[in-house]
Length: 449
Image (cartoon, rainbow, N blue to C red; front, side, top):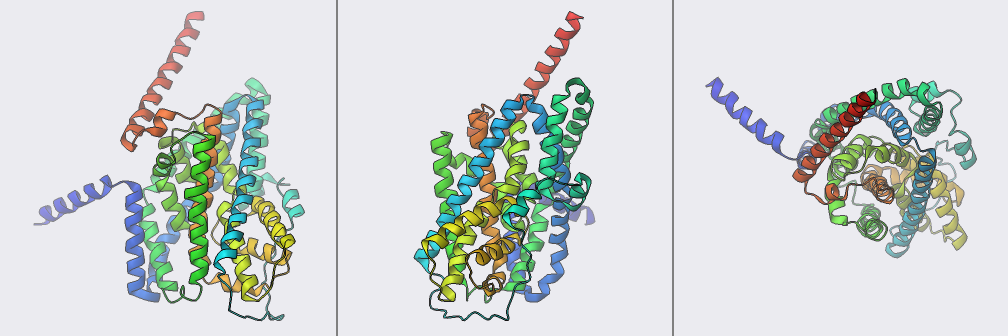
């Protein structure tokens, strides 16, 4: 009898493991929501499952970014090409961020989510959030102590140090090759560890969603439902509309294939609400599903995780107008321009972690003189909004990587256009071809000797 039960469990487990990862994550999310609504506040007992998963992802972030950036920089060898790709990435990210916040302001203007509330600002209410100025952000991107930056997870400082170290290793020639091999080995180990941890995603997502649904419930969303709808509409337009146009016009690629390829990364982004936490899944999708050379993805994606905040910027536009409308404050065109510039520049130093958008919102509200009590209004639904804006952030990172890879001739178009099973086969064939090329090069070297 026990053998029969174990056989049934084995078959069920085998069928479950054959389900695509993105579908496993979706099932985990839906089951989590249903469980959270059923258990209510008692669902908090499931939160440690999600916390453990988030912690394992956070464990990856610093070493993955550091090693992958160094490998990405050193693999180019051509410093002119590296500078060109960095410039393209920076311009693309800041350009799309400014468009995103403009879209957010437009959605907020037309939907009027805060109109009619008639709230009054209370001078005694303040939000204790220290937000660095733009100048401080620019100064602080260079770490005074790189080890401390690595230890404390200051991603922007880690990126600057990794890029500088990678350039230095290229410039010293043969003396840098031993160190490059070490970082290449560490990067491969991190990619493998990423693959192992991502298999835990459905269970971590289940725990997170059960806790969120149990903690907030449907009643918590009703008073601010218009804000949620406005942010989600803006995010949908930006991802499906704007990014599709970018892929079609600038890269001549099919957007449908793109969204199929990044479905796993978007599922992780939506449930973890962390751009940095989604980086491992993004890197996996870029190489395995989209056919992007790791030389490009390992450089552009970590950079985007820090400076590309399209979703967060769009959220700033909608929520800033919500606060202005809720308190009956009319904004001028100068205020609109100020919000766009502030949110675009502030996105450079905004951490890609859950809740960072509230700090950025404080900066935006302060800049245009809106009541900071508005932050407290948004905080109650921030988690729900965070999910949507993180999807936009991660989508933007992958769109930029795809467009830049295509422009540099580092995108395998056949791989990109293939179905999932064909993509895996093409990836395997490319690996074999690379091995054969390496063997031929080695053989020719022996012949010359």
